[in-house]
Image (cartoon, rainbow, N blue to C red; front, side, top):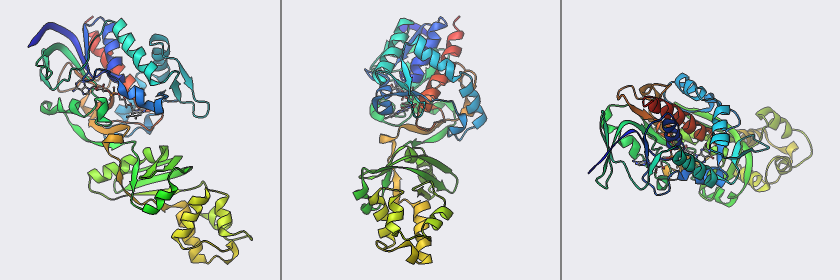
Length: 408
Ligand SMILES: Cc1cc2nc3c(=O)[nH]c(=O)nc-3n(C[C@H](O)[C@H](O)[C@H](O)COP(=O)(O)OP(=O)(O)OC[C@H]3O[C@@H](n4cnc5c(N)ncnc54)[C@H](O)[C@@H]3O)c2cc1C
């Protein structure tokens, strides 16, 4: 059964990208319907930032994003709606109060993700967007107009369509990759999706006893084709390793697995260089363990020493070979990882619609006129810290403005 209404714009997906797109299209005078398969769309806003919803970063840094597409295109898109303007939209227009974290400057929502989600949904409704919940779009046919088929056998007709279905991560929130499936017959290049910002699963059972320990370290992940490095928090978990430094480099492991390459992950447990460690482990009367304990938790120090069967001993009597082994473990410790934690716990999806498929100013696909794509469906993601919501808002704004404009 087909609805008699022909909408100007149908937005598929009610996450931050889709809500922003719908609001801006409606402001341009378009008759807009937003369709979401969930009864309560925008669930990722609720989960984000551990409930505190880190809605924006302190600065917009296009170089921090990962894409297989052109970094120039990515940069142009991000710059097209500056961070200050996004913040104005959220704070003044959507009435989402934010506060900067004193240490990082990252912006968190006062009241958390619940407030962010309800404020965006309210603004969409106030702007005249019709929100259809519990409707999953399973097919996208035609082009002039588009026919959006839902399993309920209802077909929605629209002149323009904005896809904002998210990626494949945390599928229980509604984003399960079905948006990319809608493009299957449209000859649009898709970079194979992979989980990003995930924990890593460990292979060595001895590290389980370190579970719960947090440190600030530098993690470097390397494969034949990729390399990423991050100095930030690190957490031993009962299954492996987590914390921002691991999350921000985990995509190297995921991409290597996809390409059947090997990936290695190294940890520098402190800021000290090899030479600095060598000096500290050469002179003085202290015990080797005593030197390590000044720099790291005792259980981690004991773990490193046990790996080279060294628990007692003074620095002065440390043999050169042993010293070199220890310096390597301190500055380039190979983490025994087996894999990343997969889409079920990845904060974002890497890959997606190749950016060369869209007009960067409007998010309109080059091959299918009047079809727009925004948010995490696109081939780009940023590190933790508000960068992914920023991408969703910017691309949603571009798509909404452009799709709505045609109605004026
Ligand atoms: C645990 C967690 C914490 C996070 N924390 C942060 C953070 O603090 N800061 C940050 O910047 N980012 C964070 N992110 C990432 C951020 O949530 C996403 O990048 C962002 O939500 C993507 O926005 P989107 O609108 O593109 O897609 P989504 O938010 O995934 O929304 C997509 C919507 O589309 C709907 N949908 C999908 N397919 C269909 C279909 N076929 N028919 C109808 N509806 C459909 C879904 O139900 C969903 O509501 C976090 C993610 C997770 C999982």
